[in-house]
Image (cartoon, rainbow, N blue to C red; front, side, top):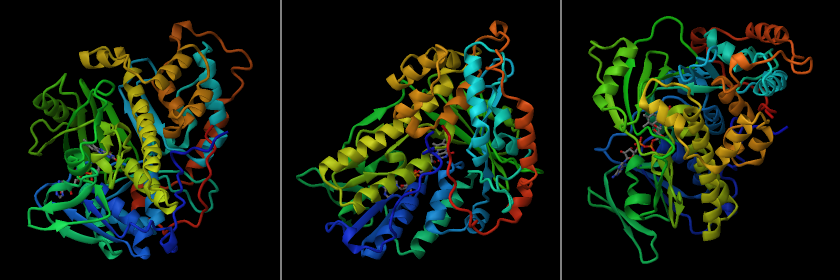
Length: 535
Ligand SMILES: Cc1cc2nc3c(=O)[nH]c(=O)nc-3n(C[C@H](O)[C@H](O)[C@H](O)COP(=O)(O)OP(=O)(O)OC[C@H]3O[C@@H](n4cnc5c(N)ncnc54)[C@H](O)[C@@H]3O)c2cc1C
């Protein structure tokens, strides 16, 4: 069995205690951009580098707003705050944050019994139910009539259905890995304050351009306020603008438009009262999907769609209707998305982090995780003294492979849809522009073979572990038609689902109501980091 990487990435970074590990050339870092990417990077860099005498300055334009969306995370965010020693109680209250057990997908599949499924975040308890899940799924792909919908097998799905928080009593021996929802603007403000407290310098100024030297590296950045600033490393966190990596250095951008059709979004809040859900809901719409994210004081909503199939006005009307806000006086925000990645996120003396590095649409809320990954792996390279061109190529290859693994997982949601109501969904189902890795995985599944070896062997498995691939394919009901199923053999039908129900039902007693838990967030648990064996 392999340890899941997605949920449990523990960066082996030292916190600034070894001056020798700083590359001699690195004295000053300029981060351009004060969105979530800029501040997350600043905090991670500050933790490792400020103690070694490196000066970190973040420049933020007073006239360019942040993207202002991005209110869901993956479980990696827990690792981010743990690493920085920031308590949940402190940041969650400030950001109206809630716990997230996973994502519910509604209406993506039309197959009877599979109209809704839940993509769970992992739990140690899953070690007791994963074998049965994979066994049943594989039996069903081969035509056996056994239960194979993922929701029955995972504690996270039950917690979300019961509006419970994924925070077990201390006496309960199993940890549940969880993520968060939060107000993106408040999170930015919180991270800003923390970074400045930890020694990051801040300048409000608009960078007009970067000067490129004869070697093709950045020599300085110039501001509208009349300053010219220099550094040894420039971090581009300017969002979709890509001011340094794209506009100045002209690093090519690789579009994913062939694989992922969505290129726009419209967002608006809605009121929240009563119980607070602990899941993101992703509902299939006519030309994309809508997110519903519960914060402690409101819902954040948005419709991610493709402008090839739908106008912004039509998208806004459809979202308003979906939310029951057709006549409400609630402002909508319209955004365009550049989906794809730069060819080289680390180029010469510039590192692109966040939307400037690339974006896979937000279906699985992976962007902040990728910011964390990029900044952390970059620091690992620095600490190992690796900054040569060859090291840059290795770094870029690692980031790009991971990025494309996430893309392939997202693409699979669209490819496996069974809706036929609009051209959008039909075009997605008919799309043959899949990566070779994804084609292989898909072909194995359709041929009734286990995809466990494929996920493990391919780089695709670095981005999403087996549990996620199985939850997606089984959740969408990618099985033989119900009429073609046959009774299972004794071997195929050997697991008793009643036992799984009992185990999960008894476990539920250890988890509090979500709203109640948010009012009583405990100090960080002394529980050791969870080890997950997720196939
Ligand atoms: C519709 C949508 C939904 C999303 N949902 C999620 C989600 O659920 N989960 C998730 O993880 N991610 C999500 N994301 C992605 C997430 O919002 C971003 O990855 C994250 O906010 C980081 O953005 P950023 O900091 O790279 O860019 P931005 O927030 O755009 O920040 C750019 C910064 O650069 C500054 N800047 C720009 N130009 C200049 C200049 N010339 N001089 C100085 N400063 C400048 C701006 O002032 C700003 O501070 C979503 C994105 C979109 C579009």
